[in-house]
Image 1 (cartoon, chains in turn green, blue):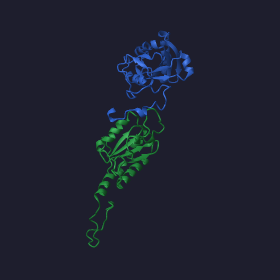
Image 2 (cartoon, rainbow over the protein chains, first blue to last red; image 1 turned 180 degrees about the vertical axis):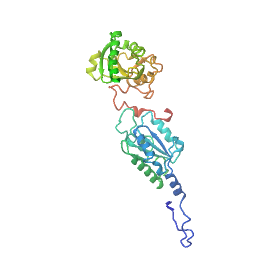
Image 3 (cartoon, rainbow over the protein chains, first blue to last red; image 1 turned 45 degrees about the vertical axis):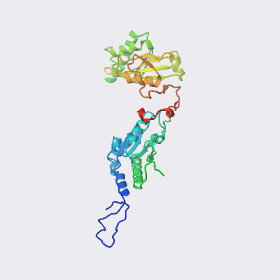
Image 4 (cartoon, rainbow over the protein chains, first blue to last red; image 1 turned 90 degrees about the horizontal axis):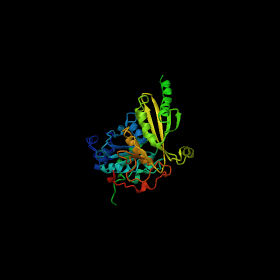
Length: 174
Length: 180
């Protein structure tokens, strides 16, 4: 089959008939497998990192190879927020609202130095890291990061989903 | 051909200004991208109107309105009676293919400058930005509000005495989503 659901195969070793036709697994594994390969990113591009993000989405780097070709500009339809660029104090409530509007489970990538820590812009108006306001799952260093870095970050999110990890934004009762 | 035209055109501006506005003209210089003139505040509006409407000049396009804070540049301050700010108008003439910079010294004690929105409607946002960043009060502007900074922001960030990291605005700003 080529698909790894992580479940047990060959339950009935003696029948032979079942070998290639039945897979057993758990619902979680199948759902996570589906989620991981159909991430719909919501781009929040405010600066030069967004140019690299566009390159990542375009044909040369082609993020759709990883199942993320459906870029949505509506937060209601997306489950991966890519914050790429500087966020000013006036923009932060907008970003917060967009994050709040995304349905769970939702993942956040903080792309580049500015989104992650303010970068070189330690100024009167710039947020020194969006993780002060929204939970970030994967950070990408770089100014700006190369498209390969963004692909790597998306793959890290995929690994987290496949591993059954819970997004940072979801509070788990202990 | 074009180069000859623009070289010949630039002094024409100065000639005409020196004929008609000799008293208003405080200084002038020819830069590599055009001509720059310094004009007294009271005569600035009339001179800009003349530049726009005079058929031989035709500076019909207002490229930018901005300002400079010279408060830490002694060599500039002494030239114009210690006027702290210099409001700068960038003009472009399509018929002459040449640029002109009009600079207006403004003292901190009287930050009022007549708005040029009645000449160029595009000056609206440019003057709002200059007001936001430097606190220049454009008289006659239809809607002089902040354009970049939040409405309740205190101070004018591009002034030289404004600290780079601000005065705690990053911490005190209301980040509630109702504030969108």
